[in-house]
Figure 1 (tube, rainbow, N blue to C red):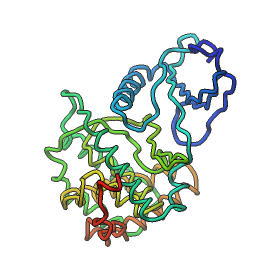
Figure 2 (cartoon, helix red, strand yellow; figure 1 turned 90 degrees about the vertical axis):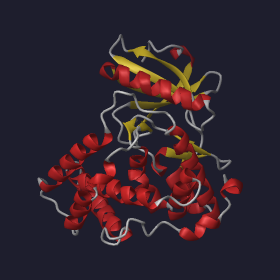
Figure 3 (tube, rainbow, N blue to C red; figure 1 turned 45 degrees about the vertical axis):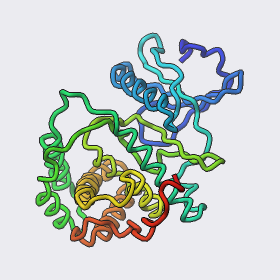
Figure 4 (spheres, helix red, strand yellow; figure 1 turned 90 degrees about the horizontal axis):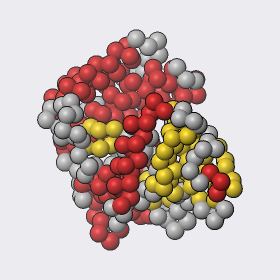
Length: 307
């Protein structure tokens, strides 16, 4: 990394080892006491990383609370690509939320939904494959991977039946930019209780509602936050069509998480098996697309006042 622009101004470099990203991540402090996030990956990722960097810059220029881009380029004698962002001070949202009041959790959830709505205002490229064809093929793969896996979960027949009976919901869906991993694990809450969105490294394009497939992590950490995210995104109660697709995306994603976790560790597999049990409970055995964690009583909270 010695050939990174302004490397000589870095006075502190700390590796960041948490997360599932293949990127090498570093916390940087400069001689002028600036705090930065440095990401380095293989040169083969250049085009994707450049596009990702430029989109994050567009979002930052709109005033969204994301890691503001600082620099992008090539390092390690042309073998790697790097991105530098302003460091977002604060703690992981999933750790902070349980210590806040329910109204504060809901208010931050509303904010996260409004931020996501703005992220989704960036349209997908015109040449993008139609969503129905793309995700039906993806659903086929998820089911096949699960069926080929030795590990099985109770109620899998209900999940597969729901997927098969609701494929028609995928047709005609417009597509937009995706953060790619939108949940409390990729959000930071500052000491002033401001919310920031980080880690766009899994960004892609697709049905904006599919982005909610990771809300399971947010709902587990704080049902009030997850409820606020939905209400903030829709500026009120989501339509039933959304809930039907939410159940579709969450259940199909959860199904494929079993073979994925089985290849990692017993610990990860147990987490996913427990999540599968929760999903079936949330959706009443796939009989009700409105999850039990969605708190309708919070709908009366003034969104304008809390946002």
